[in-house]
Amino acid sequence: MNAEVNLERLKPNHKKVTSIVVANRFSAVETTSFSAQFKDICTHNKKPYKIILDFSKTKFIDSRGIGALVKSIQLANENGIKLFVSKTSNQVQAVLKMTGLEQILLLKHQEVQTNNQNLPETHPSVCSKSKRIIDIAGSIVGLFITSILIIPIAIAIKMESKGPLLFSQTRQGWLGSQFIIYKFRTMSTDAEARKHEIKNEAKGAIFKCSFDPRITRVGHFLRRTSLDELPQFWNVLQGSMSLVGTRPPTPDEIEQYNIPHWQRLDVKPGITGEWQVNGRSNVKNFEDIIQLDLDYQKKWSLLYDLKLILKTIRIIFTKNSGAI
Image (cartoon, rainbow, N blue to C red; front, side, top):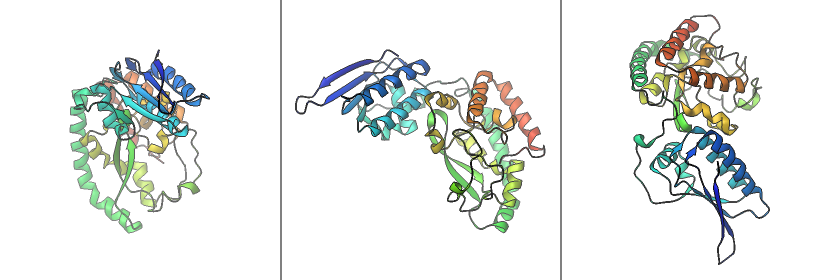
């Protein structure tokens, strides 16, 4: 990205202000160049006290662009630099609003009206009406099954341990937008407080443990049969998830991402996906998960989604196929 940089001095206190004009497409190649340039500015011995990101030319931004902004915010904060955004187009403004960055970045622009039509098409699956129809139909069927099984599941969970029936957690979906995911509770109520006691067997920005003592006996059964994920059909019906997609990461995982990792967020997260049908419990290297997610994006079609759904159903009835 050949970003234009303009250094100006403020007369009252002679502090420098740097203005960076972001490229027309804020994506893969552009974010690499942008990030290198931004880091150089922040770590220069005569670094500015304020950086203004001028988005007047930017017509497209994807998840890697969001990742670059997140890293820029972190770097600016670490160096005591104020970061402003100016002249955002409708699309950029819509993405900032959806991802919550609008509340973090200091905006220097006139407010514009945003709606879903302004959001970018990062991947064909995101705007596929047929995929959405399948999601709605599948989620309705899934919620019907959930309504039948919820009573025996609730009784089993409550009999073994006190606490809520459902477990909710913040996850990040398409373009990094946050949503609340729901599952049947499979762990003790103090699971999060005890997480530091558990050895992470995975490599990279994920957490896995083969024999997690926080999981209850009922929880082991629910995970092995994937019944714990039934409430996620509500997320699918709402539109924050899809039946098939990528694994939805947690915010603390996102903090460990490098910018290329953000590409997995170009599609909606799914209840199932490549990782589900390729031994999700045995995939303990984050880079392998990234590759599975990118493979899904390359292979995606409605027919491929249906194949993954059928494979998932078959695997659920296979011994020891569930999550850990």
